[in-house]
Length: 179
Ligand code: AMP
Image 1 (cartoon, rainbow, N blue to C red):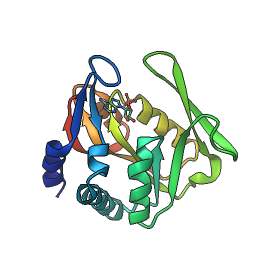
Image 2: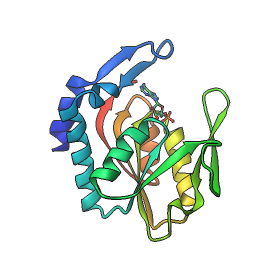
Image 3: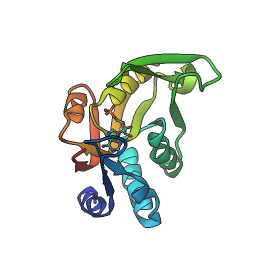
Image 4: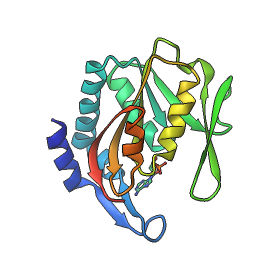
């Protein structure tokens, strides 16, 4: 099922050269969400994985991880944990800083969003260098859950973020592309 979906995504996904800056091949996931059948197929495929792997919570990385993560949580009848950029959450929080190409960024979660018995599946639209995903894993680890796994819609295989992440976490993707 994933193989067929991957072939279909490959055909449908819009790739925009030199956006947002020169040299980037931007993978535009609105070409998935614009297509009601394809969007549903992606979410159903992910929800089968969730069921088979007895995941208890879905976490999504701001902002594009929210689109797929929240839809998946709803399809799977599970809670959704937003991994937010700094200063957006009102409750007690855990924080994690991470490096960007220029400077650094920070992500946060509510401390009580994940508990020790949870098996958390972290969702993002795409993994490139893996910096965001590694930071998300460190952040969720502060809650000491039973397990942390990842699912991405797209893996940019000209960068080695996914390979590095896989050394420490179970991780999957639907489609491989170049970015
Ligand atoms: P990274 O931390 O390098 O793995 O970057 C991952 C984040 O950057 C994802 O949340 C993507 O939304 C975004 N991103 C990086 N490269 C691309 C690309 N070529 N096309 C679309 N989004 C990208």
